[in-house]
Image 1 (cartoon, rainbow, N blue to C red):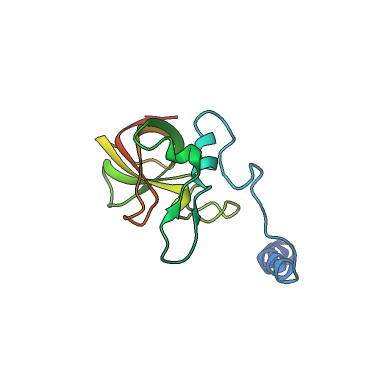
Image 2: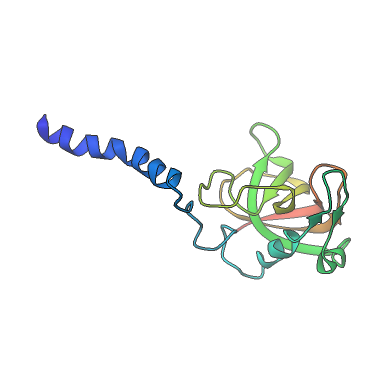
Length: 156
């Protein structure tokens, strides 16, 4: 019994010790890939451009970088993570996020790191990364800045 206590008690204190380090001014953990969960490649590079949107004020319309404005109405492909809008079953409309929602080391999701996807055919839900291709629309009036229309989903 003494042996179990010696092993389990230190393990139980690890989260408390970690919180004390962060409360003492230490930096929060960061993801090895920077602000995005997935490594930089041809399907993730666009996230860096999309995240460059700026808001001049709380009620101001978003100001898109020139590179993003040039993509409005063009077909793009992005790798990201599905966030369902409905319970269970295949998803025709969902959010594609640059980072998985539950990753503690990733940047918090915001309207510049998510797309509202309108898929051509319902896609089975997954927690793994997917590649979504479709027509990019700059869409500042639905809460998110971007929409992907007529999208197709590939499982990476």
